[in-house]
Amino acid sequence: MFTDRRALLLEKDVQQNGIIELKNINIKGGFFMRLLDKILGYGEIKGPEFTKDFSVDDNAQIAHLLQLLDQVTDDSKVKIEKELLNIRSGLSGERNVYFELKNSRLPIVCLHDIRLEHNNHEAQFDFIIIASEFILVLETKKLFGNITIDNEGNFTREYQINGKFYKEGMYSPITQNERHIRLLKEFLVEQKLIKHCPIYSLIVIANDKTIVNKKFAKAEVKNLIIKHDQLIERLHQYISENNLVKLRHNYMREIAETIINNNSPIEYDYIKKLSLEIKAEENSAIEISTETPILADESSKEDEEEGKNVQTRLHHQLKKYRSNKSKEMNIKAYYVFNNNELDQIISLLPKTKEQFLRIQGFGEKKYEQYGEDIIGIIKEHLEKVEGALKAFRLESAKMNGLKPYEIFNNQQLDQIIEILPKNKEQLIQVRYYSRQQIDAYGEQIVSIINESL
Image (cartoon, rainbow, N blue to C red; front, side, top):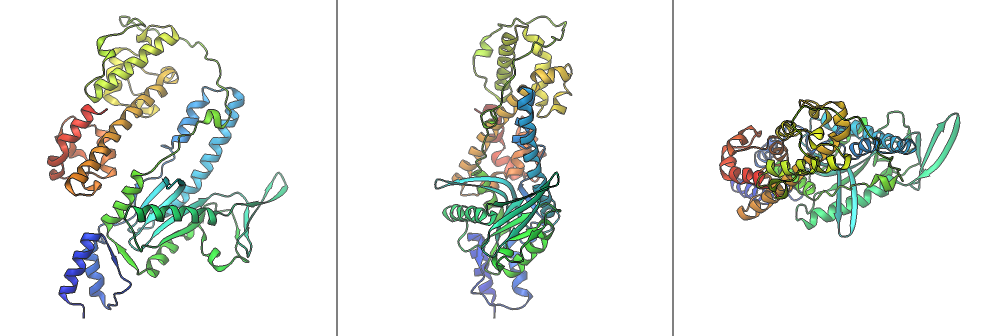
C-alpha cells in the first residue's frame, strides 16, 4: 500500500530535485496520479508555452537582407531576393509546425530556432519540445518534390521543373538530427538538468504537397518521419508510452531557460556570403527646416562624455550619429533630425518602420535615409540593457540560492525591456510579477536600466 509517509517522502524528493523516476514504482489507482498532479503542479501549464517564440516579422536574417536591398546594385538585388525566398520558404514550413504545436493544448514548453555550441561542436535546432515525460527535437523540412527512402535509409528526391524531371540524392535528415540530439543530451547532462529523461528525434515534413514513400524503409526509420498534421497524434503517443520520469512544470521551464541562456545565433555577413556589390551613394533631396541651425561640426562636453543613465547614453549615441551623418552628407545636423525629433525618438524608442513614422517630422524620405540606422542604434542599446539585466538575474539567483526565472523569467524580461520602468512601481505593469519580487529586485532593475553599460 502507498502510505502517507511514502507520499511525503516522494513529494520532498520531487520538490528538491525537480524530477522523479517512475520505473521502480508500481502503484495502481487514481490516488497516485492525483498525488503526482499535486506534487508536480501538473495543471500549472494549461497549454503550450513558447519560451522562445516563432516569428517571421522578427527574423534577423530577413530584416538584414531587406536593409541591404536599398544599398546594393541591381545584380546583387537578384541574389538577395533569391536568399529571401529560401529563408521564407523554410520559415513557412516551420510556421506549419508552429501552428500544430500552438493548437496541441498540451502542457509543453517549446523553443524555436535555437543554436547551441558545446564541446567544440554546434547544432541548429528548429524546435525543441519539453514535456513532463520526454524531450523532443524536431527537424522541419519544407521540401519541394517527393521523397523516397530505401531499405538502407538513403533519401532520394524527385521533382519537376518546366516539364523536366529531376532525381537527386539528399543528405539524411535523420542522421543530421541524431547529431543534434547527442549534443543536446551532453549539454543537459553536463548542466545536471537531466539524467534518465528520454530525448527523441522527429523529422517533420511541412509541405502538404510532398509525398514521402517509406514503403521500403526500415521500421525505425519510418517512425522518425511524419507529416506536420500528424504531429499532435505523435506527441500524445510519446506521452502515453513514457513512464520513466515526470518533470515538474517549473523544472521544464528551467531547462528551457538554460537552453535559451546558451543560445548562440549566427550573424551572417551577407555581403561576403552572397558576394554583394554595394552601389555608389546618390545625393538625395534635402528636406528644408525652419529650426535654428545646428552646425554640422557641433560638439559639446555632453556629447564627448558618457551619460549616466539609459536615455542620456542613447541621447549621446543618437547625437553622435547625427553629427557623423551631417558631416558625411555635408549638411546641417538638424536636417538629419532636430532636437525636438530627438526627444521624441528617445521617448517612443521606435523598433519598426511603422513606429518610426509616428514621430512628428519623420516621413518616408527620412526613413529611407536614416530610419534603419536609428532603429539599429535603439535595438543595439536595448540589447545592452537586456544583457545587463540577464547578468543581474544570474548573479542574484546564485547569491540567493534561487533559479534565474524566480528573479524574473524571459517573458517578464521582454516586458521590462518594453516598458523600461523609471521607478520600481512601474514594474506592476509586468505580467505576473509579484509585489514580493518588485520589493526584492525592483530597485536594482531600475538602477540597471538607468545605469546600464
